[in-house]
Image 1 (cartoon, rainbow, N blue to C red):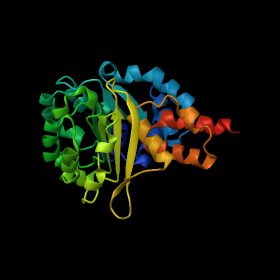
Image 2 (image 1 turned 135 degrees about the horizontal axis):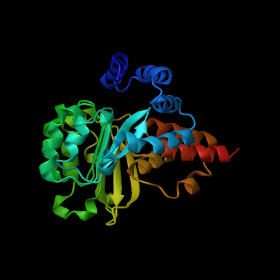
Image 3 (image 1 turned 120 degrees about the vertical axis):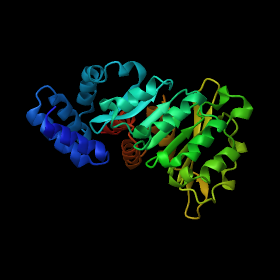
Image 4 (image 1 turned 90 degrees about the vertical axis):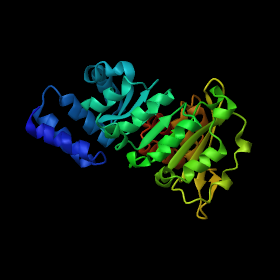
Length: 311
């Protein structure tokens, strides 16, 4: 790799929010790197938000070659031309060094962990090269006793804005589930002060037992709380988003754009087209913009298809 290319790449890694740095790097690849011209094209297409079909084609052709054996461990979502979101079915001592040491994953900002044993949480906390850059962390099977060290080491997650916890509660004994008291502890913690959104899984049918008004008057920075009602099949049946109002209290949102976006973040919505095909065009555009801003590009493309079908 040339010194100039390395310098441009390091500029991207130093500021993951800088789209200009990515654009300059794309121009360099398109002009100087014949073997990696595909990457320059991918960056340009994803930055411009154009031709999702071509984007999918490039990724299908190149992701295995780029990521190699990492494909076996991780499901990786590319955004703005680089890997941004990583999902793994489990998190073990094998996974941490792969994420920390791979230069291909140096732009990862969101991590979803389907299963992690308690003894592997310290390994995540120690991986500061990862924790200091991620903005979103989802641990589906996290229990209250694992939450304490996460809150105690909040300084290792300076950019964290979205946190998802215990999204499979029905598979846990009742005494190991996240409770309202646990949630209150998150809100009152240093980590809670910096979070913008919190997702909590609760057993399906128990929403009435969650009186979020008892925690909504705290000084937490959380602006949106999503309560995910989950069945024993780990299927999210319903998502109720609560938004912080002008009085500082969290109230259930009646905006369908917010609700659909929250559901899509929680998992696939199989009847999405049927549910939104009668929406006004402006509302559909608002949903598309929100999904794009949250990195849900495939779902946003589906909404765009619905808009286009309206003529």
